[in-house]
Image (tube, rainbow, N blue to C red):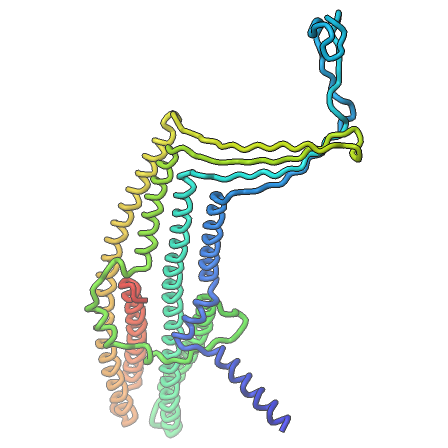
Length: 445
């Protein structure tokens, strides 16, 4: 019973490992949104914006400080009482001293302990800064939407490259299998004296070319998987597999519906980023204008001071102070006015950038729709051409086997079929990329 339980656990564990190494497109995108480095950096930017808010809020929170100061005079400072400074009998000094007298005041040791309280009552630029920092967090949040969109796009295209290469591999393997059968039959006919050795060699050469093409395609699959790992944030030293076929992703009806979708600039994740950036530009102007307002602060200090020649014999003396500070800007040489003008210029520049980006995105949508429409047509045309080339190849094979066709005709039909297959594969890839590009342009990716 114990070994049976361990075996079940082992099988379950191996199943989990296998599942982790194999992804459909949706799972690959979900994995990337958790592990890709760019998304981790975007989340850290949000965390940094949170701390920025707290940092600026701290400027408006009252502060309390404690301080302890100790001084010991190795030699007390001397003060000069000038000649004739006192009247007769003042402070037991001789009347009208005939010369300057040097005297020392104070004790050798001084220890001061106190508390200092400060509060900012009003500073317009600080309060505007708090609003701006909150906008900065919103900006970081909007930027993560753009990063997520870009990650999904990169994963889709990397995943599709593998599906295309896998599909190409299946076609090449089928071609090799069919050609090997033809080669076997031709070789038998050559042994019987019905065909020339040139016919056999030509087929052998074609098989060799297909095998090299298959090897090159395997290298493409290997490279495409590495790119997918990179886009997903997947460990580069681990194996990865795709669990879907190309046919699972070729949704023609969905693509046709995309062509009728209306475009709105607000649907793009960049719109929110640009809009928040515009608010920040306006906040820059507002913050500079608040600099013309006075700033008001309050402070309070309380201290206890110990004075003594010997610390154990000293006496404590308290002293405290409260007060406020009002700073009123009067004239700064128009420095702030020029900064406000520059901030207004930056705001207008950003608004022009937004207008230009909106126009360029409209062009992107129009071009993406045209590309997808063209890709749909190429799929139909290339599929029909591939079917026609396959029919011609089969008829040419029959004629060749019956002795009424030449090996040159068979070779030409074979080459035409491979070209048609390649064009069909390329059309499928172009369609998939065009569909992803249109989804991105419409803000649906």
